[in-house]
Image (cartoon, rainbow over all chains, first blue to last red):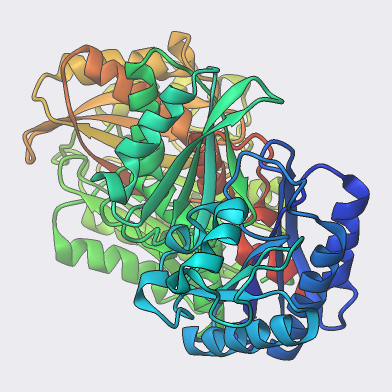
Length: 305
Length: 305
């Protein structure tokens, strides 16, 4: 493990309902030699699948382009519906450094992937986070504002909305891909035993950084019609700044204030070990905790000395 | 790591104040070739030090006997005071199987250590948990009931109270050692912003198994005079039966009911990774969590395939 320099890629594709299409999309990645599928998760209400995979830079680049092609082939955004914001068939394509890799390597990969997606598939590309070419495109939600329907119209009349690579029009069925390089984030949802979307929206607004809530927290209130619930959908972009237990306990408190119970939590994809350790240590109020207080870590350290 | 068969030993000695004595006690263990000190923690109010160490069976046995000798040399129970129950200078000596080791191996070590402690040092021994020779001695709190002062008198008049090895009288200054074999436990304390011992005692009573609380939970309410606080001192003997977040959240709730705030938590010694994962996943209400949702674990698994 420690000798490897691995990068993770966490594409979000706009299909979360049709199992055979989802399998085909995952296969587009796994068929590329050198890729390791770490996780996949689909949500029918979001109508979205998140694939987590790792590999060498060359394998990641190839797999990302193959996935963009397969998504453009299978998904028509004119007929795609779901509660999650989205701009394209392959909607978001972030590259994330794991241990031994740098954000610069990911930025380079993102730019190379974006160029190839436009050149080889004809789908235009926006760059976000560390890969952003324009300051106002650093934040994903700013790039995606308006979604497929809104941006398809906007790019034709407003030069400032045009893609970074390709276009200016969006692809007629596949929209555009938002490609980025970013640090690891945690995608975590809390489903509420309520059908009142306003409850989820009000909680999301209270906890997110843009509403004066916790730093490094993004949140949306979304309906989950197939389950008869509403959801606070959360991204924690820096779990060292705002550990998960803080977000979690505050959502519980705000839900209780409105008399709403928690149905369950959902982790989308994977989380780093340190995020879990920080959440547990925070809950247990262990001010002097470090990972060496875990037996397995301590033994590994001593045995490797 | 996975090739090793390690046993952990977690002696509790009745000295938690005098730094030079504590160092001498720890040194009695670390001076034995083949031992690895994993952690040490001392509490002045408990007047107790918990040492966590690992090693080969032969090294553990030797170190346990050396520690018993050093504790008998340095600690006089006639003058030892502290808020934690105790019977001897080396009070408790549990052997715990880590990955690759069995409880039977630990039981065997416990019996061999007990025999040597009596034969070589002259301190009598009680066996508890998996090493108990009598059913009524399985539970540590039953063996230790009465403490040094109570049992010193009781053994003289009541045959049923006598040590399993040696005696029948306790050692005049070192008392007796309670030697055991047990599964891993988590020693975790929650300190309350109150000087009212009844608050800590009432919470301890509500959460412990013997009071109708959580299975596998032992708890005591103790004063912490040096800090002006009271403490709910907790042992979770099976964290898969009662995960830590359950205990933690219930103590918060019971304290809040009495208008008392939580000062901090304290982990004594170490905890297994799985206990931490279960606490975090429980807090996050992730019903489908398994350790493969942690990036590092997933990568290790795939890379080792």
